[in-house]
Image (cartoon, rainbow, N blue to C red):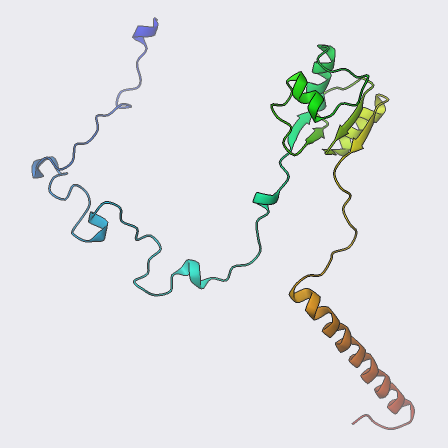
Length: 198
């Protein structure tokens, strides 16, 4: 068999259907667009329109948010690739390996928001890393080989800070809890005195 003898399966390639070329073709007159109206014209934008009624995408409540525009974009690198670069003498282990060193070695194209180290692959070089993030398995492999990892990402604050409605509702909820405690105390005192609570 030669390259010029290779053919696709029968029926895999079809000629384009020419529309508006007579009723005998089955695609004449309206050309598959149905009757008259907005949908028969070019540039129709009727999807989601409900005849003037409030459409579904506006009736439903909007909750939550997406962090996509503000998310830190990281380069994910496995230790196996770093080891291959070290073996090829593209990375010097005498100084800390950071995003700039990886760009210079050709492991990543640009630094972006930083580098996240992943633990896939074998790693046996003694090296110090300064990266934005690293997985537990990557840190374990590096420390086992005698190296160290410095995490550049800011430490996460413990506890959640209340904002908006939650912040305004917190003092009111605390007041409500105090009232219930006080009410419970009065009931207890009344029952101990032999009186029934009213």
